[in-house]
Image 1 (cartoon, helix red, strand yellow):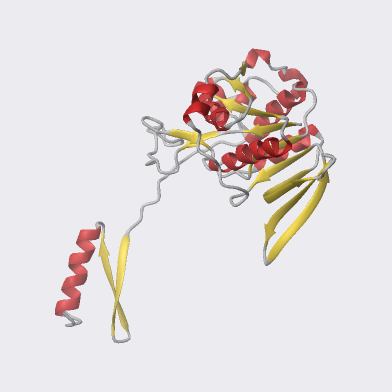
Image 2 (cartoon, rainbow, N blue to C red; image 1 turned 30 degrees about the vertical axis):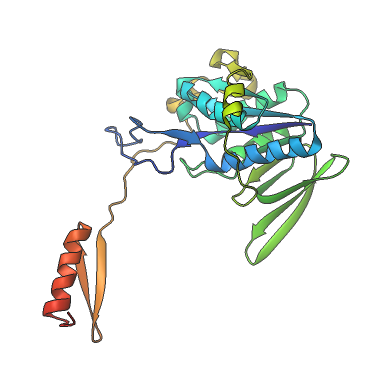
Length: 279
């Protein structure tokens, strides 16, 4: 069984995000990059399926700039067998439609495959379109936001469980199929030291923009960069949070304002002492 996992590299969830001087993107200086958290569930599930069967191949695929190799190495260290890196600096700005077109073509180039897994969304752009687009390009069924996966004994079907409002839904589709993975599907493993060492020797196929048959995909080079993106960010802002505390004074509420916590606390203590007279 060949399982393909679509992976994306995103900023660390604990990174302090700053807006770049251009105002339409983030400042990546000093940013730590990680595997998109939802894609980690996909990698883990693929490895578990392979381990349960006792055979198979797990192939990772990503599309992005040179730094994305680190996301692939992480997945390889977890236990994936090999990877494909569709590499160009301009791919950092490619929209989901074009990403899916190119990724689907590379999956087709693999020949036979049984299952495609990916995360339910990319946390940096908050979009869950790529996986669904890939399924459409491949002409295979898909099930989104899945929390449980079970293959049939003859490996011709997959039964998926997904959370819905007020309950759960069970969906069965024939293989090959694409599944987008939700939190709760599994607990991703940490890469072991032997796994990290082995990952350095595992094959990573590099595909450049010159290796892509853009005409066959109905795309141009511009479509894979910021100039040809079907949507673009015109302005990016970090929300400004004003810390506010409330105290009750009879039926009336006084708002305690302060840009900093210490300032708000001093004002609260003053109100409790001088007006509420409780301290």
